[in-house]
Length: 164
Image 1 (cartoon, helix red, strand yellow):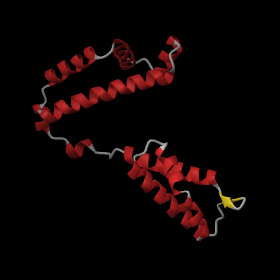
Image 2 (cartoon, rainbow, N blue to C red; image 1 turned 90 degrees about the vertical axis):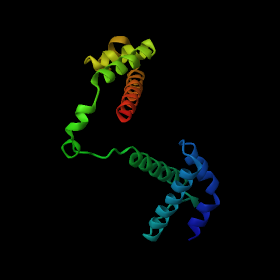
Image 3 (cartoon, rainbow, N blue to C red; image 1 turned 180 degrees about the vertical axis):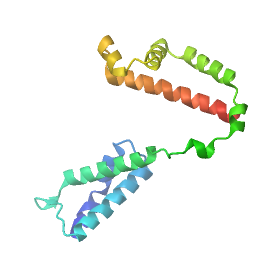
């Protein structure tokens, strides 16, 4: 297990790399530990990860990146819920649509004018790519603005729904 020992000598470097992805210390430790396990499995299968009598740092970097992205994908997965399984007519009767509509309008009015206008244009059916071509504003700028506003509205409306 000479390779694993060489790997562990640079443990702080691996933690630094993972931390540069935006992870906290605990998550970085988990990712680096998973990297050690993956490398150990590869070595047991007879794979060689050396490069000129040293460790292939690029391969380790790619392994750390892959593990980090796998963590993020798992974190972002939203479970599928069938509406028929949870539908209850009493919930529908308890909702105050007037309050929700008023709160929605209030949220829109409190937004910065640019954010509100982008959101309204996209909600009215204009695609982000069309809007980007017409205005010469970056697609990603428009997309991020729309997504930010949509997330904010959903969060606030969800909180209202839970309080009722």
